[in-house]
Every structure is written in structure tokens, then in C-alpha cells.
Length: 86
Image (cartoon, rainbow, N blue to C red; front, side, top):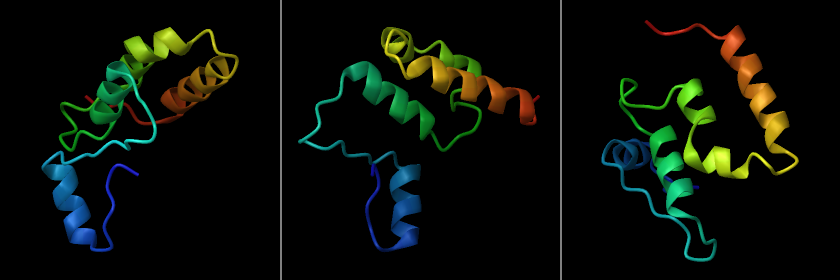
């Protein structure tokens, strides 16, 4: 988990301050970290949209993996069924 604390207020504060610690035991590319940070962005105006997620460099790089097309189909389904923001 990017945020870990038993105190909910601290968890919210960590997110607002963008205090995210990535595990030392799992190596993540810079593109992957960037995507995670963008998904956890507290400001909805700055947070990635579904379209931006689908077109993110890390997703595009992984698209050849067998499970990615399934994930993208689910994202498309969610995108069509959710309320779009203005």
C-alpha cells in the first residue's frame, strides 16, 4: 500500500502531502511510479482521466502482456458507464 498507518487522519494527510513510499523489495520503473502518483493525485483537476491512463507510457509499454487488453476493456466499460466530468 502506498499509505500505511492505523490513523485515518494521518493517511489522508499523507495523501494530501503526497508522502508516498514505494517498497524497496519491489522494483518499479519510473513510468510505473509516475502512473501510481498520478492515480493518487488528491486534486481531481490534476488526476489522470481514463483516457490519460489508457495512453500513459507505462500502460502502452505493457499492452503486449496478455492481461492488459482485458484490463483496457474493463476501463472502457467503466468509462462508458460512469459519469463524465465537465
